[in-house]
Image: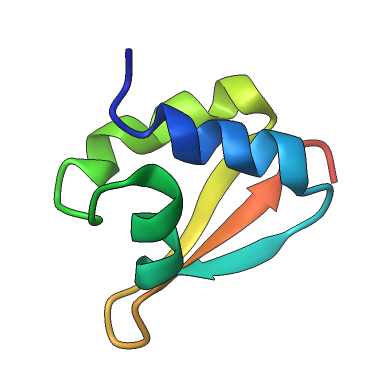
Length: 69
């Protein structure tokens, strides 16, 4: 099981368009902070109908995009 599965499930169940989450929001949802391993795990999100867009280290945000839009 992926350590980011709670985040992927949240995105699939609660979002129907493109959106952005802060690192703090992601930590609250996933129960763990964003770290370098996120880059490896992000491909799993494709199975949930979304992909990771821009990752801003300056603003500490990640953009998520719904597939097929």
